[in-house]
Image (cartoon, rainbow, N blue to C red):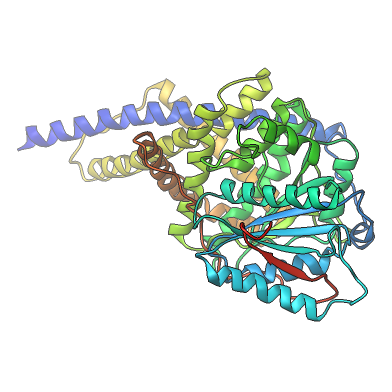
Length: 492
């Protein structure tokens, strides 16, 4: 029995050694990758190349647009938030040259009813002298000609057809298209900033995205705060400085009408997006750069010190968060490998490697947590005298030490960026949420790999969206233009 017991501990010690070597090496590679981005960001800050201008939010919000602007909002099963989004957007964005296109499906009557209710509320409180933007209205509800859910890309293509029909009827082209989701709370100055960037020569522009802390979901719903604080406070700044493509977040971003037309010409059906893509927004930003277009990450702070950003409540349930991140990993890391490939400069390839490391990160994190369990078991057995003490080699000792230093370095950056955006208390919570974010990454990586395998077997891709229950906006309604509901057969 003693001999058998000794064999078990020997096997566990060997397993611990191999796990430590595997996880330690790949954790360190990831740490070096992140530290390189940190170093570039620090250099940009030190040289003033990452300075963030301050603007008066109210003054910017009142600036006239440089041309007609369309806003696309695809919506499937969004009855709980869509009306608030429409009311808030058309209240804080009062520009006459704005038209909001909301894409709905005929088999989703609750979402259509929510859009129509918002239209009715806005119409009742509108100034009768305000004729709105091109075509005489500022809200267009577009009913898709096929049942939902298809994909978000397919819904956006339907909105694009409605926009082209409007342009043909009016004889006037929109200057750019802005993209938002059905749960977004837009910034009053956001539209003018995007319009200004496009008018200044950019083909694609992206505002920061700022998830909002959720008092009722401090751990799950709020864990997005630290991820976007670093991604849009540092990583996107570095990408822009290196000349790499800027991936679109799908919200708070704009594309010039010229660039949208070029994307449409590349496809046989004349649609700008591939309806089978799970991350059409990410691909749009990459495609604009591949065509030689200029991309800009537009950062500015208002007089209150807060970023001009798109804000929203992100998923607050574990299953919803895993589903959302599954779509990101599946679309960017796995589909992206097939659909976009590896092209461009060394900086571009480096950024694509960073974008696609999700499945590997999930594997390494899982190995790390298994390693912790095995180490705890061995430590307990050694303390009880059931297993002999085993020392780590000098190489493994160095590897463990280097990873510990890298972990505390990473934690300090996470705290700093989160605290800057959301306050010190939220920054401290971000540190406590690290194990939770790792578990979500593991679950999403696993789910994405299986979902990708099913598509290889011929399974159709559907809009695997996450539900939203609440919208953060709660403001009095002001003047806005009327709306019209169109079907595919009756007009856009």
